[in-house]
Length: 280
Image 1: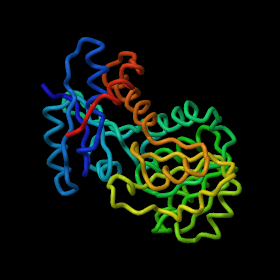
Image 2: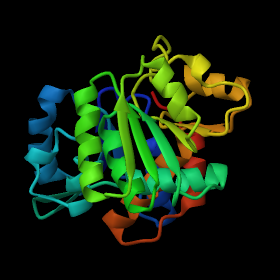
Image 3: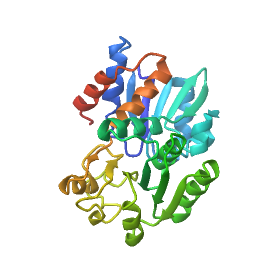
């Protein structure tokens, strides 16, 4: 019986079922994790269903912010970030939290062996993934967080809140097409984080000019999408240390599993389940 699931729109690409069921099976709990496409207008009805029928939910694009008014409780850090990716459901009560920041921090450490504390970050995108991870990185001691987003006002709201909570943090915003400003940022960046949904589909364009990822750059490039995207392809081609979102998903999923079950997440089994699973 499905008691846990990931929802999103789209969601057919998700490897969370393979990863999470590997963890449940390791602990002899069967395979209770599934996936469901939920369109934005269907989210309230889904939450009503989950309240009665599920024990846990992972949320991806576009639900991480929209779900907040629909649930009973939001952890302080997730409310501060304005993003929820994990629901814990008990006796009809729904609590929301976010494991995205934890997942990104551990993915950066494992992929690049560079610490977050003192790091300078440039985000492309200001959606749910950027909300959750930027606030986590600031709490973990980041020195600078700069955000490029098509809607500058949206990025500005994140930056203003970050500056309010962390007075010593360098923050800035721009549009992705402000090439000169982005060049200036990237000369002073340790990690470039691609946090938009562009790249989920083969026909998606790059969110910034790929040429901004230039040979000899000193930053690492991380794409939160766990497939080859135009920017990931460009970074690898010019020799920039680069990684896709696989380890971020695995580590945030491991944290979700531990919150749901109180059991230690078998990360290696989850890694294997992620890689072996073939979405429909």
